[in-house]
Amino acid sequence: MEQQLDPRSPARRSGLLSGIRVADFCWMGVGSVATRMLADFGAEVIKIEDRTRLDMPRRLPIYKGDLRSYGEEDPNPDPNKGGLFNNYCRNKLGVTINMRTPEGKELCERLIASSSVVTENFAPGVMERWGLTYDTVKEIRPDVIMARMSGYGHDGPHSGHKSYGPVIQAVCGLSFNSGLAGREPSGWGLSYMDNQAAYYNSAALLLAIYHRMLTGEGGEIDVSAVEVGINLLGPDLLDTLVNQRPSRRADFPRGNRLEFEGAAPHGVYPASGADEWVAVAVFDDRAWESLVEVLGSPDWATDPNLATVAGRVARQDDLDAHLSQWTKNFDKHDLMHRLQAAGVPAGAVQNSRDLAEVDAQIAHRGTFFELDHPVIGPALFEGNPMSFSRTEQHNWRSAPLLGEDNDYVFGELLGLSADERADLTDRGAI
Picture (tube, rainbow, N blue to C red):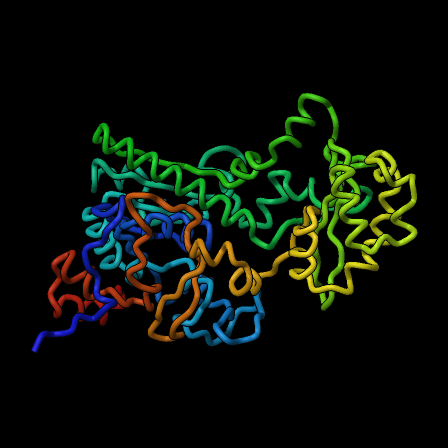
């Protein structure tokens, strides 16, 4: 009888990056999302963890089927249930190494020698305490690419500071530009910059891998999340530097209203249900006439003063008040389709459930896909937004259980016998 292979057993990967092995020290989001991109397209990413200090996404109680309590650590977490970890780490292998033991450090150096890329996003100083600087890692593997990801970069007066997404968002200026005129900055989503910086980290890694393919030379990458955030300021930064217009002034930030082109109504309006919204944007007289018709031509909307863009912009507050009273009677998706059919630009303001269960375009693109997991069972995960004509995302396995691949990596890849692995386990090194 033919023996059935374990579908979770490591096997030859397919994809653009197959053949690239990564010794991955990354944790949290900014590092793990970056290396997930490599793993999605074939790289053999070996995630290195410490059993005595679990990765935060393993500890946060965002569990399948449970009410969300984001931000509160579980005092007794099941390290294999964490939703964030499972979303960040699909297609990766997982091993445990205690770097505070001499045996663990030696094992890590053997793993680095067997890899060609090393990644980390610890607070500055951690890798140095382990003796794993670029210079020392290069002695182990001369053509290594070592990617370092931190809040402020690894040189300069702030390089020693610890950080994470919300701090970075404030320091880089993004938070200052958020909110409404005359109000305090509202800030961005909790860790928006953790994920945004991760994509820059991925791009830097891909460029370094391409450079090595051409030249045979490795290199060190040092990504500063603050500088990534500054890159996202775009026209607001240019407006301040070139036009001397501050980012907070009497009429700015403008919230949902347009700054340079007249458009009214232009905003987000309440729909039926709790915290449900629909966006409507009327740029010209034709769209306004269509909106008035959908509204049923009420007296307030047929006022001749509203027949022009200038007239409507002058009475935006009145328009917003009237339109809000009307939109709150309708389901946001039904109203979106009704307005679009009439030629009025409109869109439902979608929440996470809408993205996964309602949006036909996202479903068509396969943005969310299902993977089975030995602890949480089948679950939806977010995919990559890119599609290629000649390769595809290789989803071979859900995220590794804690230490799931110790035997494969330490045994088959590094050549340690079962007795040697058992001895390292007894010594607390793995």
